[in-house]
Length: 460
Image (tube, rainbow, N blue to C red; front, side, top):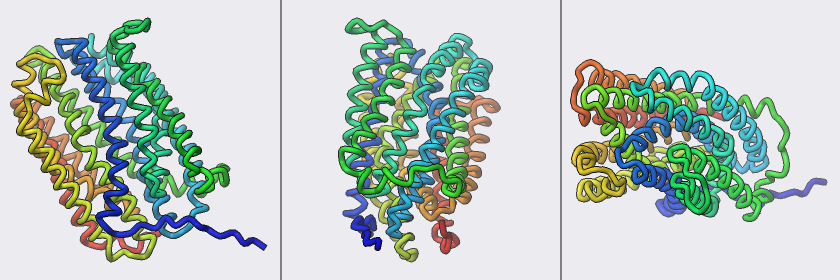
């Protein structure tokens, strides 16, 4: 007779303590990759004082991110599924979801690598106004894209830790990752300690190696912390068409949502590059835009950690049949996220010159960048609310609604930046107001949907 019992309780409580306990390690784990990206820009900015490589880093970074977020969309779908199973005490289903998620991730990586060597390269060569920048971008990305499968597996391991309320273990792999990134950036960009001087491509190789190190470290953490045994990850590893279909139904709308979001951001960067070349004849505006992306990533760490927490908690709470408390959870997390974002916005507005000076660029770069930084600080506050509301919708498993919200917001965003830069040729700073408009649209639509209650009764 089978007397097996399930001693694992993964149900979450609704409290600020629970939110903070989950979000803090996630925040730190998100902060470290953003710190890595900041490190890349720091080394590139000081290696090339004219800002060309810093500008190019924005274009290539967003391109790579367009493929990386397909994995993030997969992860968001899996996170909701695993969290729902945790809330339902169906622990045995977690292993099936995880291993079939790995199969999906490897397929996505194969598509990303193939497209980068074919369509993606030609797209950059024909889109950028500067042929020199376009050639450098293609060379960089043909190296960088091979890190995609390792990145996606690393992200899936993180999702497993978050969804099973083991987010405290996230830090181990991410600390190892950041040490590796700093070391390889330094020695490969500058050619130190016997390594060849590779410049911009050195940053690509450094990121590739770093993602391999992070993937191995995350697997070691899962094993060393006993999570593999605790969640039965050594079982139910077989291919399962039914599970794959479920993952696809939940994740594909999120993947499309994130891809079109990043593609629109790449569209924005291309327009900025063209705008700067036409009106100024230089790459200053592209370099500033790359730094503003740093701002969103660096100061948005707590927002995205709380958004991930919101996704998990909403799904877990629904799994416990506590649908009437979902809005309470979302509002609590929005309060924390908005409050922290206001603090960050204040810091940006008090010390903009100091923050911009770390990139080693000219006084003109700082002067032109300060007003843009102030606009971005307001957008960060709006993002802190909109991202939570949108991830609340993700947690209800209504991923098609999330996709529809994103499509409407992206249309508004893209039309705005096209008119500002290509048609009306307005000042650079006016174009950056698009982020505030985008996140305001997201917040309004997502929160209205959550409040309507039309998500109730959805089963997965």
